[in-house]
Length: 320
Image (cartoon, rainbow, N blue to C red; front, side, top):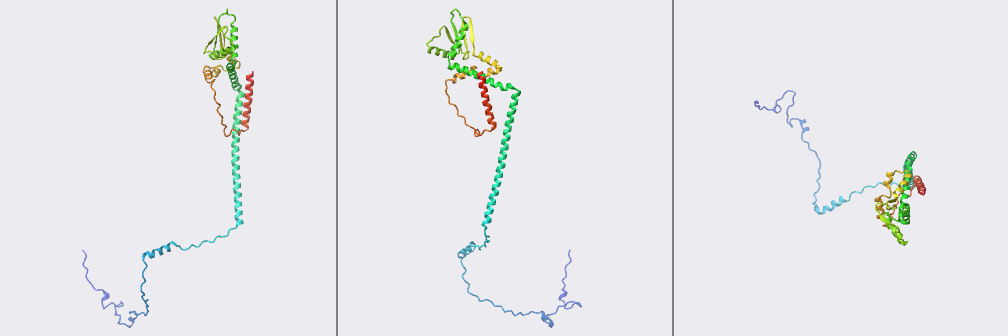
């Protein structure tokens, strides 16, 4: 509960005051009070004469003006261009050209030197590889002569096949030699077994010469290889087989017989392939040169010389 406030007058409104305190006085009671009264200040105020108001422009008329003021900004002062010294400009151009030329030449020299170093490294690798191969051949001479021996034997087989195909008289000589080995068999009929291809060649030869089979009878035997002859009369048989002659040559060359038999041109499957392609003529396929084929280095030339020397050795071996 709050106590009720009792109304009391303010001390400032009372006429009696304490000694030494301010007492409210009337403005006109003292002469000095005039100094604090209202003062009249003499200021002349001249008001402008009212003029008739001009008609305000319409919004349509003011719009172009505002737009024109906005579209035309105040001109910006342009900086003054310094005069160009043509001589200094020419000197700067020459210096730039010279500097660029020197930098380009230095870059090109660096690239060429790096390429030469790479080519030299490749040549050294090739030379090292050839040197290792030559050292291996020195320690294993059979690795060098084995391919040459196989090549010589292969050439001998191809020569025999070519002679039997192109010269039927060779077949006739083989047959006659086998018949001579039989000797006199009391006029018993002689049966000569040949490869079917040799039988056809021999019959065509004797027909052109106006000769018959004579005292012997031709018998085609597909199991016989071209160039092989088997002559029989009664119980006597004489054989001259081409594989025996080639095998004897291979033994003289000290070749591995199983390996030679696997690569012999007188194998039945190879002979069958030769018979299928003997009457067919095919065009040789063109050989396209590689882009770097004509840029042979010294190593390539040395390799070519070695290949020519190998060919000369092969020719000498075939003559032997």
